[in-house]
Image 1: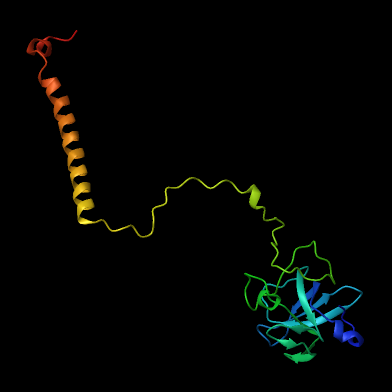
Image 2 (image 1 turned 135 degrees about the horizontal axis):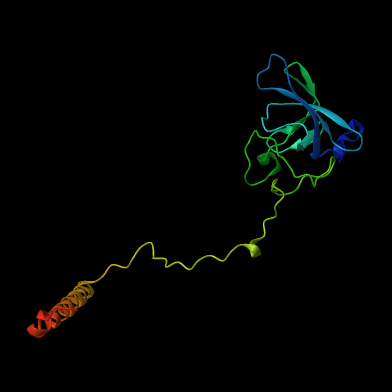
Length: 192
């Protein structure tokens, strides 16, 4: 893994530190960046990735690297500027998540020249820790499809609901008659 033309067979994408990022005059979307790729090597790369800025740590495929979906990276003139590689996006690296066309950004823990991580890292400095996640609340989950009731089961369910309604009515009526059954004198006494 290196960026020297005499060792192109070993060239793979590496982490690079963006030193400068400037718009190319007359080209609305293109920018030229200078990237430290370790070992004292700095590459000039032309990109249209909008998420790149000075100090960002990106994944660079130098000339001679083979990138899935792109093939062999060659030196090219883009927007009138010579480009010595390309910035990789998440799909090129086989990462889940991330946007095609947006440069793959890695955390500061990766230095220039390091191999990029095998999976998309979190760039907020956090670590995904499943054991620290709060427990999920117990939820009564109903099945997506409920079993159809037979005629006998429907009749039994209807009879059960009717019996529950009648029991509630009887309880309400009994509570109402208890007040109505009180002696009249008790209701007519003046309250002090």
